[in-house]
Image (cartoon, rainbow, N blue to C red; front, side, top):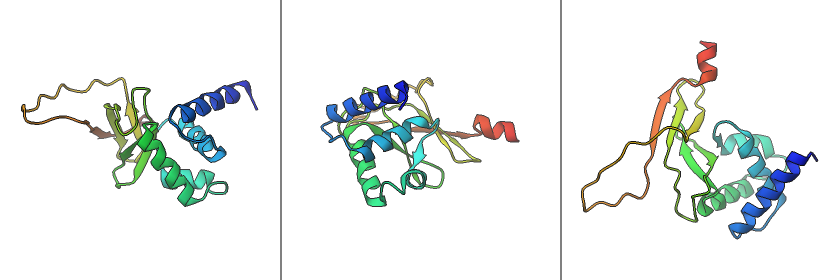
Length: 148
């Protein structure tokens, strides 16, 4: 195991413990796969990668518990498939602060979190309370632009 991989596993172990989750190899594996991707990853794609080691029900439960704890957030692609990306450290159990633009490629359907893009200020009438904000931008990702 490389030093980088050992450090990453320590960080993942801490993250799981901080969120009151038992440290298991399937949970560590899912975190490793999600963080290796440039774009958000869907459950079916994760299943293809870890399917020999983690069954579908366990994977679903892991993703669900990660979402509840504010470790990952869910974004739906253009086909309505849920994809998952890591949350920021501001997210807490049942309260996500991942309020950023999500870019969805209209060709490859990849979903990217654009943390550096500022969200517009939303002013609601006084009798409304904003809990979350989701803005999806649709276009061509860098890889699909190169290919066209």
